[in-house]
Length: 256
Image (tube, rainbow, N blue to C red; front, side):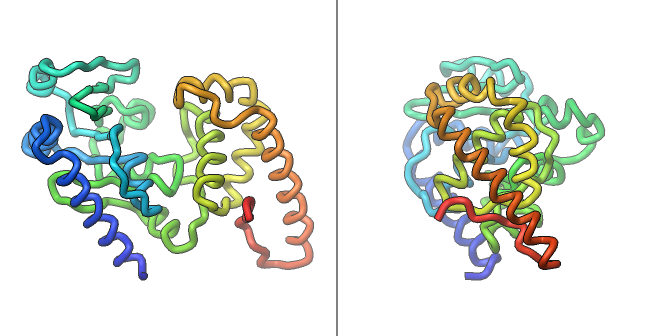
C-alpha cells in the first residue's frame, strides 16, 4: 500500500472509531462542542496506535485546541477535571479521560514565542520529538495533518527525531525503548546518538519518570542498561564498517 493510501486508511479508521466509541455518550457531546467552537486536533498515542493497526477502544485521548477561554472553562465545569502544571486540563467524562492542551501554553510556543503567530497545523507536527508522532487528526475536517518526517516513517519504519530540543529527555529515552520493543522498529543514527549521549546523564531519573508517566516501572534498570550497552556495541561496529563502506546502513535493527 502506498503512503497516500496508508494515510487515507488511517483517517477513515480514526473517524469511524470516534463515531463508534463516543456515540450516544456524554463524551460525544464534548467532542461536538470542541468541533463547533474550536480548532481542535487529536495527537499522540491514539494516532500512533492506529498507525500500527491497534483499533481498540482508547480511553485516554490527547487534544490540542487553538485556545482555552472562559466559554471552554464554563462548559467543562459540569465534569470532573483538574488543571495540570503545564496549563492543560484532564477531564473525566464517563469512561474517558481527555487531556486538553491550549496551543498558546504548549512548551514549544513558550520556548519559541514566534510560533504563537503560526497555526496549530503549521507548527505542531514539527515540535514532536519522534517522527512517529509528527501528525495530528483534525476533528473538524476528519483528516490527518503531518510532515515529511511522518510520511518517511510510514515508508521505512525507522524511528527518528524531528525536534531534539525537549524538556524531558529521560522520557524520550524510555519512549524510544518502548517503541522499538513494542513495534519492532529500527533506529536512525540521530536517535541512537541521542540515546547514548543522554542515557548516562539521565539514568538516575528513569525509574522516577516511569512511575510518573505509567504509574509503574515497566522497564527495569538492568533491562535498560543492557539495551544501552548493546546499542553502544552496535554503534561502534557500524562506525568501523563505515570506514570500509561509504554508504553503510545508518539504521540499526535492534530486535530480531
